[in-house]
Image 1 (cartoon, chains in turn blue, green):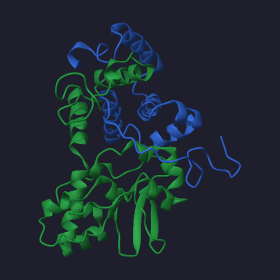
Image 2 (spheres, one colour; image 1 turned 135 degrees about the vertical axis):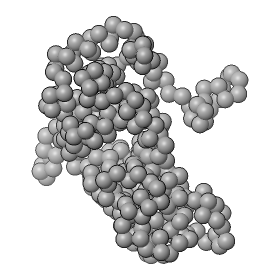
Image 3 (tube, helix red, strand yellow; image 1 turned 30 degrees about the vertical axis):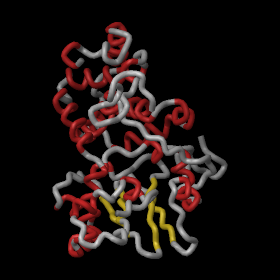
Length: 115
Length: 213
């Protein structure tokens, strides 16, 4: 996804854009956990911040517009962990299906000892 | 924000509105976070206590840490020299865990104002200041900060004369910046703690100025 000037979508410095919305919000637990996973996986050497960035940038502009910040991060973390071999795609898929059956909300979907 | 119910209802202990996220239907990406975390723990790559400890460590980082650094630089010329020479080390010497980041302090002077951005992503001096505000990560800030910083600053309520040079520093994954504002006038005799209370988060990003007493 190249612009005519040869830049990729994430290289947005200097482009036109609207007013800065100064809104801010506290982060939800699941978002803090995503952030913690990135820091801890980096410290363990599973992947680097450059690996995170590469996955984020390869998602393309559509993901930037439609997914929240930590949604993009968990997708990028997962991609790097799959590449590292921390778990397999089928293990991930099976677990995500199991989690959906635990309950309808984030809190309900935790394992009992994590809730 | 109006409330129908009794005092402080709906506010966290720190006075912020609770977010509704945990009550909304479980999302695909939330399921992925749970699954990734559980698999990493079960396979022995991480332990649950480390995840909780990392969240606590990140929650403990706040702009107050940076404010303490700035206030000390305002009162201790030798420290200020060390900060401008090697901000990572100067902050470590104050007991802050900067990690491997290369932190650079840029000083505002009577004729130069500094501001920071990460045009490519969201790089921010998070080990000192905590997580960046939402607006720092938006297309609008990232795109425009390097092209029309004066207009962006006016949106933050900072209107600098044309004679002031504005330097915009584009952060990278490995190199993060913090703005050292000029000490406000009328603060002679104030303690470091009193001075630190004048240092806002946005003044350390460069989209604001310190409070005045």
